[in-house]
Length: 354
Image (tube, rainbow, N blue to C red; front, side, top):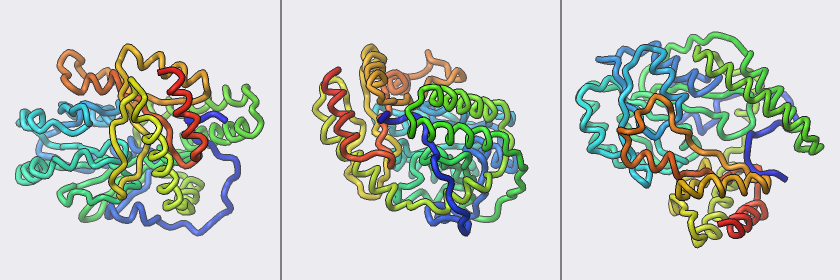
């Protein structure tokens, strides 16, 4: 069985009562959207910062940058260090900030060092957004200084669509448009992949990958704040979040135990905090070796994404420590689809090729 790559659907859930799950209620007044970028666009269209200047982490996905640019923001970027912690001096060097965005990478509270920075921004009436996509199922305390939260739910499980915007205080203007072209395209892709998983028919795998790519292109071309589709809402409502957390933590620990002594593959985080639920198992591999090792894993049916490709909006020559993160990081799957034997297989393959 292959490990990683896109989630899939094989059996559609029976219609259930739909209600907002507990892992989302913690964020405040909430609007469910088709994607994280839809949620960000929804937010940017209703806030009025003191200036349309955004300060974002330089280690970021292009899909977070693009909605800001689409809405007319000037974007600046702050560095993160080799442990993915925000560089405080890099943040303080920016004097004109209307919106500040931060996040805890891969589910870990690496942004916990921002308390003084956030307090200063609050005094200066800067709007503070935390992207909780990576930390959606982690239970550590979030900053009370956050004004808004955005997140993508579809990064965690097989749903056609799913993102959200939340306001820590007050009410959102959650008037969302309906356009399920993206969700329908992704649903077709997830069902096709589910059939491939059952049958091992490679033509189905190719078709699923094509449909996924087409769906992502639809999202890239239109950042409008579409609402979540009904089927995704049902799946999200029925999710056993505790099972998801326990499987991911168990898989992470199995990987850490096996990988920490493999030469050339450096785990970024030990899972020492019970409140953390990991999105992936991130490792650092020297730039000149990462492509080779990733390629060999792919040959063995183990698909490890790179979070993220360097966004074209960033000026590479101005990057410091963040550039090494882009060049060396690799994300190893540890999600709820898999178990201990799958993690042992990953370790075994890494041992044979590193």
